[in-house]
Image (cartoon, rainbow, N blue to C red; front, side, top):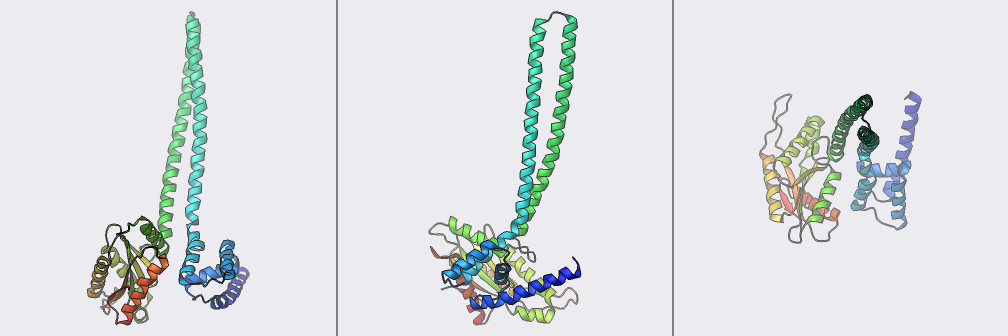
Length: 342
């Protein structure tokens, strides 16, 4: 890309920015990175389906609530991260089609060979001449060699395609993991979290609803300002690892965004979720982190948490929001504590 193209691209992005932020403000949409991604795509005209849905909501005078904002991002922006997965699926389909054509050719070769054998048997029964029998044997040997060559070719082709299929399967698995994984922590990302919650709610029994814990690192801005973003990233990874080590079975840990995390506990009563949250909080509180460069200890890291139990028929975002509000009550009450949603 030359300098002129770069400049044109920058000017276009600046113009879209100039139009996007006032539009978001008029609709009462907070300018978070994910909300901005949604409305930037809308203003740029990059996603007709997204624009159609936004215009429908505006025509219905629908308020752009946090739940709707998250749905727009999840349905129209996050889904696009799976493009690579779909490409791998397409490649895999092409390999399968090619193998099918090879099988069709092999079937024709086998049918031809069976016909030769049948003709040989007929001619052999009718011929008493040794010379003729020798000729028939020569023909059979030639056809046998031809069939063997065809079979070897098919085997080699299948081995090659099997390797291609294995490679594509590995790529598909890797892309699927990438699409649902937070790159900094290795935990599930927010998109995967919503999928897991929806699954747990669908599979729950009346007497065993899931619980959710929302965590937030206390005074994280101070950590970044004092030690820099690299140390801040290390603290985030430490908390993520602590979550992962202190959950089990079907429990799921995810990075909700920034320094905020979520743990999903299927079929877990509120007291059980509270116990998990307290255990994680205490592990973080007593940890002694040091800087890798200077070996100096960091100030004590603490986290606050909020816990909620799913209510039958409740909207997914309301379920999470109750835990989030309980989390911020913990922070307002002094931090480094766990609060149960009312």
